[in-house]
Length: 312
Image 1 (cartoon, one colour):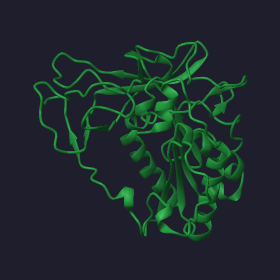
Image 2 (tube, one colour):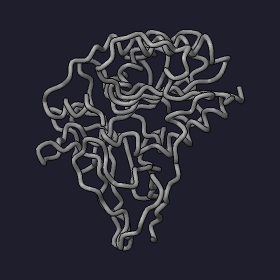
Image 3 (cartoon, rainbow, N blue to C red):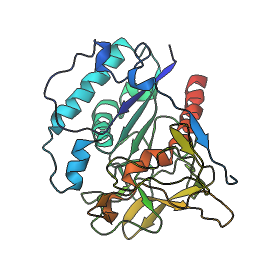
């Protein structure tokens, strides 16, 4: 039995309208005694410098599906309460969400965790692909959460990691879906998983080996020239990407840059844009690969936070 458990809230969509019995292990994506989706091949090819989602697709097309957001939120609350009562046993917890999942978790944390005794067991909340975590200008705490700041040190716990990513050369347009709060007051928080204190950092990204992403419409790519056959489901390209949180024109976003070098045979192109009618939808940024970009950094960070939590 692990000493802490990751609880992941994925992208939510409509399509169910029934209560879930969390006493049944099949109701969970995975748990220590029921791996299911977690029992998968994570082998990765590291290429050094030398050498499905119907609701999302519907929104891209301009015809969003109706969704019962209260149902989705209440379902996550039910799962959280069941976990605390039956499985937690004092463990530290990492809450992880992306996109709509981050929105659901933001509400859960604000109502069920922030400022309450259970906050002491939170290693961090990783809320990616959202602009819904708001802080006052120049502050690390306040706004959306009153007691949980954004993370600024690797060994810090009870804190928030959040960002919405954009290519450096394609910053958020005025009608962007991400990068600033939807209502006045404060700014959207941004935390660089490769440099919590601020400034640029090298991203330890993981990508699907095919080079494509869900709903992107972009063609598969070759990771290296001349092409090399990749036999693992994932690839990692050390030193290829850098990221930095920036403020520009009222936007606060995670700017991602590809370190192109003439003597580096690896790709200079990373798929991740939302493509609609053959054109990049700039307002979505790199939403499709938000998690991929900082995956290795986030894993390292949680490992450090875990050690700090257990040390207390």
